[in-house]
Image (cartoon, rainbow, N blue to C red; front, side, top):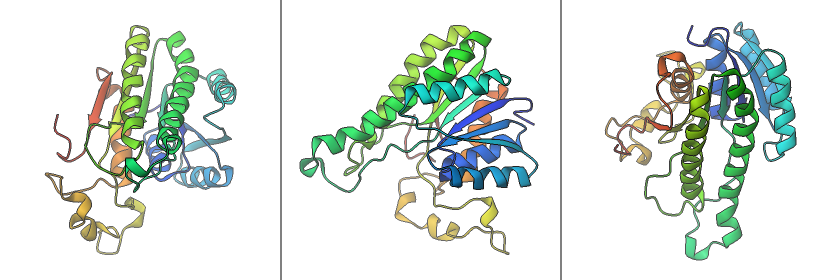
Length: 255
């Protein structure tokens, strides 16, 4: 298994991407700590992991509360160390409004929230990782596309990419990798939602949907496919990948 004997914290583990990543990490052998705002949702994810034979712990953590994030990381580190940290928290952005009609505070909020959250998470986990001389910090980010009416989203994602580069530069000499994942979006299904014919609900529809128009391979990754990439990125198979964007946009964003 890719992550055998590893300990991972997944922030935003109650969401679609976070829960899929948490399940993938557990499937690959990691002991997973689920952190998020809503305990009931986290417990549902933990129960699913345990039913599949994995190990999962739940903690209600506000990622904007630096002290709370640090206390949680300290507790996880004390129980055996932190090997992997994945940030799947939402930036609470507002989309669909042109910038000419958007209040500045509404534009700025996702930038402030995402950078604050990832700074708190990366510093709390990174402090322990750098002391141990190993670790991986990952987040969903990007922001290189040019798409209208996304409010502060692209600025937030670009800011996260910049933060990751600086974290990688400072943590790298201590054996800690930092990268970000760029996705074109997912159609909203996973491998557990298969029809009897083996296809997933919305799979055929997604192939013809406007969201795939700019993709060279005309396929949006499912949440499970995103999680598989996150598992690879967290594993030793990716040990030389840092300060890098892991681009699986199907050619929508050309490197």
